[in-house]
Every structure is written in structure tokens, then in C-alpha cells.
Length: 553
Image 1 (cartoon, helix red, strand yellow):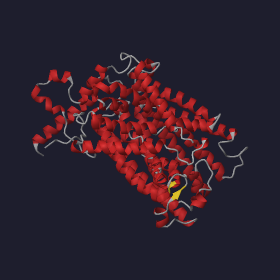
Image 2 (cartoon, rainbow, N blue to C red):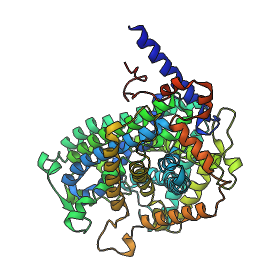
Image 3 (cartoon, rainbow, N blue to C red):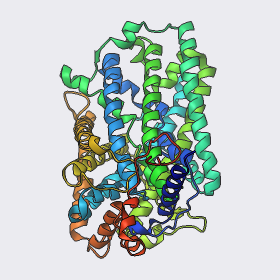
Image 4 (cartoon, one colour):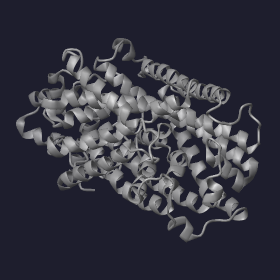
């Protein structure tokens, strides 16, 4: 090997590790454990997104909105749009590898002058999205178990319907139990939780391989696989929307399976060599989720029975009935238990990301009881932030009891704030800070402005779909509460920004310190280093799939 190349490589690698181990240059103190590596960071996003569970949850919405032809074609567009957005966020994540990252990314993307305002807005958006996500996931998990009642023809008193208060009570009890299990896993030490990440990954891939191998075999031996024409070229309008908008509504399905890859950034302060690893975890998890989700969708399109049979399914999770049709009762029970276990663990991983967001907001001082919420255990975990997630989720789940409409209304905005935050960050980068974040190992260079523009346009389209009514004509029963919840969160954010003194949350000088740190302008380093050595603070680009920063030679 060339000796000069080894020297240059080593200096950059050592400097990266030093910078990651010292978040003080970004204005914060390292208090969380820093023991996780790439696999844990990757799993934080990949498993929280849960591509196979996500596809199963919204697959039937895709069939209603355009049918198979709209689903696969819109999915390809979504892959391009989401992967470009992931590249935009990875660029920022590398320069700002901080817990609760997404609202810090938005703040610093706006520049010091507007940073505080956009930090408030995106912090409210992100908390709304991530804190409702766990509760929604627990009800989804409960739906799998209770759908087995349909398979085994159990005569539930009053009927298997969310209109039945006794049935809602069962759903509520199961959902609360699953939430407790997911929270309990978050009390494991970091070393043990590393095994949870890996187990969740293995469980998801087992589910995936059974779906792409066992399900087609079972379907072919029972009701038969669909023809290629039926699987790819048929259309359907089950929304009542005009044909063009019915097709566009398919993005509710496709984008819904790929929203949340920012989770890798939320655990950046717990990841070794975070300015490289966290950004790589974010980007590669988006790639892997997209590829696996697309393949899963294709298999399901081939393995679903005719629309006449499909839309007669009435279980809370129709895929349980589909599995029973293709694999028999035993096969359906096994696949349901596998999906349930996977969802519990993946909900726990989502709580890891969400609790780090709550911890970060509390660390900056704006939440009630911030001092308590921001406390860290001796092994470097924000345990109280996890407890806040449990209290909020448990209360939210209680709204199932009076009315399922109340619960679904409250969680309906789960994806909207995240999509809005993705688009807003890209817009701020395009307009206000296109040349900032010089310390990023994943600088987009000449692709920057085009990528920012594409991300803004694509996320704008998805945002419009998410706040649109899904069924037409619009009635009270099918009203989309997402824009109401999103609007309320935004109003609260603006009021919080207006009335919260700067001394209490995110002082301008603190944001300026973070911004300068992301641009390599740390004053402490300037004092210690001669001026001639200053350019080395800007690292060369890194290939996301390589194990270390490029040498630049």
C-alpha cells in the first residue's frame, strides 16, 4: 500500500471518531451511551419502518386507489422520490449527528436567523408523528390476534366489529398489553438491546422469505395465482374520486411504507463514528426498505384472489383471512403469530427512536418537567423519556373505548408531519442554506440543488395525498382528520415559539454554535490549530457502502 495514503486515511478516520465522540463542538454534552454500530443504527430505521408489516397494513388502500397498475407504477416513483429525500437527510445527518435530529436539522437548514422558529415547528410535528406512532402500532398488532376469531369462526358477543363496545374493550386490553411489552424491552441495557435489533431484523427477514416462498406455493395449490396481466395491468376505483386523483391516491400506500427512515438519526449520539455510520444507516435503510417493500407488494399482487373475494374479507386485518385461504388455519395462525411478535419488537424499536426525540426536546428545556425527562441512567439511556412515551401511548389508546373514530382520528396525522418535515428541510436547504454543512461526509455537491428541488416537489405531492379525503363524496364517517391534527400541531408550535422566552429553549447563540460546528467553524479547534491546517476539518466524500472515509487520493 502507498504509505501516504495510509497516513491520510488514518488521520481522517481518527478525526472522525474524535469528532463523533465529542458532540460539544455542536453545543451539546455527550451523556448517552455510545456503544452501537452500523447494524444497530440500520435496524433503528429498517425495523421501525417494518416494510412487510407496512405493506400489509395499507395494501388494501392501494387496491382501492387505482388497483395493481397504479400500485407498482406509483411505487417506482416513490422509490426515486424517497431515496433522493434520504440522500438529502443523510447529508445533514452526517454534519449534525444529534439525538432528536430532525428538528435540529430543520433549524440549522434555516440558518441562524430563522432557526429557532423552524425548530419549534418541526419539533411539534415530529413529536406528534412519533408519539402517536407507537399507539397506532399497538392497535395494529391487536388487529392481527383478534382476526384469528374470524378464521376460527368464533361467535363474539355483539359481533366482531369496532361498532361493538365489548369488542373495542378487547382491542383496547390487547393494545395496552402490547404497549407494555414494547416499553419493557426498552428497559434492557444497551448491550442486550443490540440483540433485540438483530433479532427483529432476523424475524422480519423470516417473515419476508415465508411470504415470497410459502405464500405463492399455498396460493397456487388453492385458489390459484393471478395472471401477470391481472397482477400488473388491472385498475380499480374504490375511492369514488375522479380517475386521475384516484390514481394519485395510491401514493398513500406507496409512501406510507417508506416514511420514518429518519429514525437512524435519532440514535446518532449512541452510535460510534456517527457522522459516517448514522448517515449511512439512514440512507441504506431507506434503500433496503424500498427494495424489500416493492418485492413484497409484487408477491401479494400475484397471490391475492379476485377482487370479488378479496373485498368480502371483514377481519380487522384482512391478510389473516388471506393467509387462511392460501395456507389453511394452521398456516394462518403461524404467520399471524410471527407478524404479531415482529410488530411488538418493531414497536419497541420505534419507541427507541421516539424517546430520543423526546429526550432531545427536553434537553433543550422546553417541555414541562424537562429536568426529569432529560435525565439519563448510569448506563447512558433516557429511561424517563421512554416512560413519557408509555404514559402518552396508554392514554391515547384509552380513546378506543368511547369510539374507534376518536382513536383513528388522533393517529391519522401520524405520517403527515413527518412528510411535511422532510419537504420543509429540503426547501430550507434549497432556498436558505444550499452551501452549508461543509463537515458532512456525504456532501451532494452539484447534485445538491436538483435533489433539494425534487425532494420538495415529491414530498409536496405526498403531503397533498395524505391530507386529501380518501373516499368520495366526503361524509362525516370518512372525514380525514389528518389536516385538522396537523394544523393544530402547527398552531401550537407557532404559539410556543411566540410565548416561550429564548432563554428557555434553543437560544440563538446556541443554534449559531451548532450551525458553525456543522460548517467546521468551531472556535475551540481554531484556537488549537494553525490556520493552514483548517481545510482538513472538511472531510472528503464517503461512499455509503464502504466501511471508512475515503482517503481523497
